[in-house]
Image 1 (cartoon, rainbow, N blue to C red):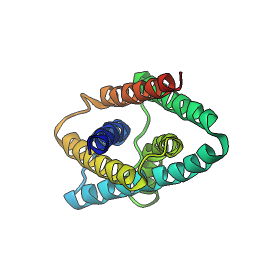
Image 2: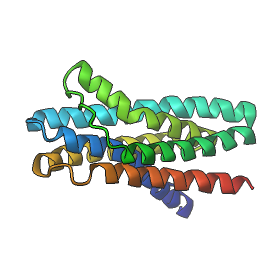
Image 3: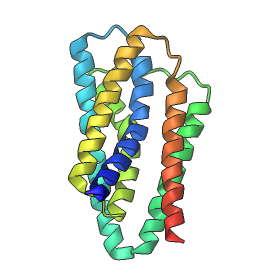
Image 4: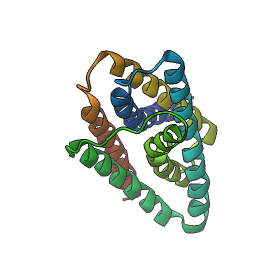
Length: 185
């Protein structure tokens, strides 16, 4: 029972770290005049993508784990470290990218862009044999909730936390990657 609680806790932290991307972009996007219905739809779409992408990653990770064993575990840890570093790096860049409009194809592109890192983490979790349904529930719920929170807060606040939240998410993934790598030695 304690193993399950520990796994849920770990997965929720990882899910929150991955959802920071959606939260930070949602902060900026929330400054658009969005109706509550549109905010609801955006959150559900992001949540759905944060279920589909890790599912694809977990499937690929389980296949790699069966074929390549501990080498696949090494790759999984490295992926988390690289992903964490990339998130930190992108939070430090000071370019003014135009935010994608969250409607139609723009919404799908936005959802894909903030959930790509979930594929990599799903790959790692598949390699390590995480419980698929638990991963998908945690990732989907966290992404949906954080997206809604970012969009709603963005309506109230003018971007004071955006890059910091992405850096925090990157630091968490980096720490998990280092922990996984340390477990191999």
